[in-house]
Length: 339
Image (cartoon, rainbow, N blue to C red; front, side, top):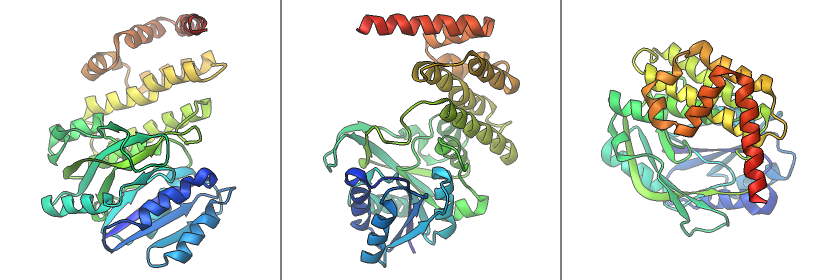
């Protein structure tokens, strides 16, 4: 088996989303591949739709039905356990790919000897094969034989996992898996996995279609989801320690942790949660400084975090309540001006 495509599915029956995804997969021009669709205890008709594809394409589609919802990381891990392909690909069940997506990525792997291959993706708001807004997913200086500098760049900006294929032997050798039971599992797995691969190449085309709609699991900010992002980064940091990467890539790992555990979580929480709690804001800061007390001295922090954000974060360093009330007033004034 050349390729295993893993599709985690949860409540995607509405509006033909799941059918559009599955149709793009069963129609791939690549030879010798399997589609492993893992239904994560959907409460709609998703499992029935998947069973119909399994019946219609028994040589291609295999369905795994989870008895309880474990979120996408659990579903992906179950898919990995069942996968027989030499290569592994992931796709979100509300997205889709061009007919030659996997053929082109596998072809690039064959031509170059890479053990990880990716491409760009296109943002779309309707079910279409017309390219929308193209989002570059990785850069040229992250490709080729991966030495220390390339690994540093991939730690800082790993890009999306769904627009890549991975050599299964590397995943097996290092027992690579996703965090389970939380959202944002790719925030941990993406940069962590990149450290174990040795040769990354890209197909310079937007072959993956990322569907923009309100029901996506990445939309909507809650305190629970903020905690999931924090947990994903805690797991990432611990796995980097276990893998022996922390000393070699300390600045990059520290910045990645700071950015996702703290900076993005702090501002998305304050902006997206209706009644943010000062206690949670305080917890965020303390959680970061417990492991990286000098995070503001990190050169990547100074380069990559905007001046306004750094000023506000510095204010929180003086007093959590000052930051909290200042930022809430700032948002209130901004909203009033929009009305």
